[in-house]
Image (cartoon, rainbow, N blue to C red):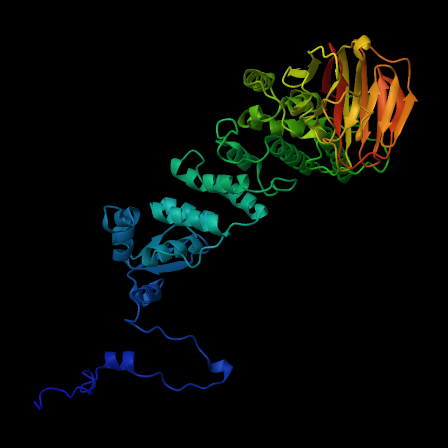
Length: 543
């Protein structure tokens, strides 16, 4: 064997060990096993490029420039060439004509040590171990300053994957609006991420906590409309509106100095929210402890507001809401709710906004969706309609048009399902009634009734009817009650169905006849039966 060649089993580096190979290959020296003497694992050079670069971050001996940060003159050390390769801003600063190019210490009066640490981590590693939700905005701002768009994208991805709390999201958005230039296109990347986070949440009272007034304007700007973005699920527009009104009240109340005024402000907010939230989307549906459930049309509704507290609280609320109104998509709010807003909030929403929204609904022939507690879907059901009946006026009117010699009475139920523990109220307007053919009967039914059976409503099973003859029928078990002398064309019959008590009251032209049906099933629908030439219109009646 050639003596100049090492044996196969011999280590190529074992013959003449160098200090470097000794440092790399030698096992670590024995250390004491006591916890007090344990120290971090020393950096092993050459094992990982990323580990070597991480070791160089803010290392005085491996750096050739020092930055003096804005927070108490904290010093951060870096390597010029590394920074210049990663950022045009650093390249101009450290190698260009700027005075910092020859300085060994460079002050950064607008950059904190936390911001610079994140920038150094990105420049050296292309990752940011120190990034948190709390410093994300400041990191984004520093990336903007040092012309690092990929770092900005990294921050946005971090927020998108880590953000879970709406409170933290509100704080981040408020911080971003305060820190960043809202009009700068690159910053829209961050604002869009936060905006999309809110859009994906289940909206309820408190979702906007932490959102400043300025941030709210950014949150609502460029929001997609349900009309123009039918492919993407969006939060209920009216629910969003309720949450924004509640948020505006909280901001207005927080400006009050007197604790008693704040209590009064809370009371005003509660009353206004109850008036707005007739669908009980966000406000509890339990009856008031004092029994004073003020209705929209009750003159007492505004008395506590005008007589008990200064109008300043409402003025402050309107001052906060006013600039936000043009940013909202009122065309996504159904006509019933638009009327509620007009009746409750008055002039806070400009009339031209309402006009545009109503114009959209007229052109689109909008029928409010099935959400009965607010009066929506107060229309007859096209899929549960007797063969002799036709619907018109977007389903609000039903007419018997065929003169049958046999089985001349047909029935219909409404779209709206009455269930739960809510109170449902509606009117039936009698436009035409032919008593010689059997007249009409209005009331309640389940979806199991036979629509073409020649019986007035209330005679066949699972139906309850008030006939134009004046008889009140209850088929469960069958009973007949004479209510009055009957009714004819032009009469308005009003129903108040209390599903918690399972009872229904009836009024005829505002004459209250009290409860006429009890022990109703847990799920019923407004219903009617008509004979030839009968015409009825169903109409929501607000509380």
